[in-house]
Length: 155
Length: 179
Image (tube, rainbow over all chains, first blue to last red; front, side):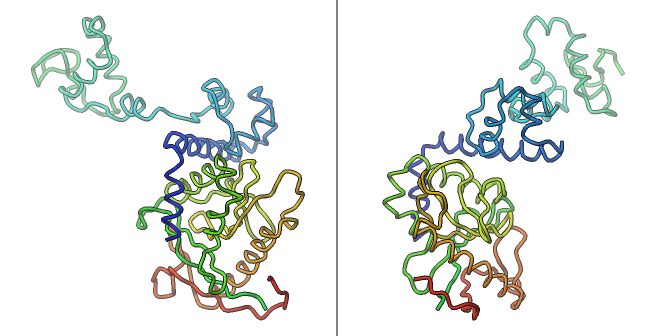
């Protein structure tokens, strides 16, 4: 019964508001962790970012509504990401295409028609993303032959 | 005579098998039909009067129980117990943050800005005494009965069964009355 009461009351908090509170807590937790790693005090972070110490204190209490500008100041001070944009990061870093079809689709999604007219640029981009040790033959595009490598050479 | 305390499962975490978040218990005093935390939830001085902070507190508690666990940064340390929330507001929920994965909720109330200590607010003072008693008795019982904590939160009996209800024996220390 008690838990139902809890969830009933919680449901009256708008979903966007709940997300905001959650994000504030996550950022506070992350900054706290980074301070420990750097062995910094709040005042060190304040002087490194140019933010007021009282503001840092609000960030750590999960109360601050941070702007992107402030987040990037914090990221620059810690030299690491404080937030990531997961879908974009996933597209760029994780969903590395492993087949020609994937490469082509992915490349087309990212590159304009103009760039597609310059396959060498696209080749470089795909090869930059390729995990080391992967054969160039896996990253074929612009040519329908399976046996053609990324440089358009026939194996 | 100190009151009889018991803990009851208060599953805010939606998926009990989840490795994320943590397990929540609520404190019951004697045979009181209402759990201590529910007294806070039903307190008209708290909600709707402090609706915004109240909602924020519930949302943070939900997020901790389902995702992040009970990070110390979310709590205010008090002598022998803890308090929610960490953000500045006049609401207080007294609790025992046992670990990152286990939390015991007590009663709470309003500590207005002009009030220096919680001891000046009778409902908070009483809630604090219950939590302090709980800390001692629970530590005792855990040591004596071989109770241990599950990896994803909650207490387990020596055979590995999850404890959803735990009545603590009255400690025989002190004679201070709480009522």
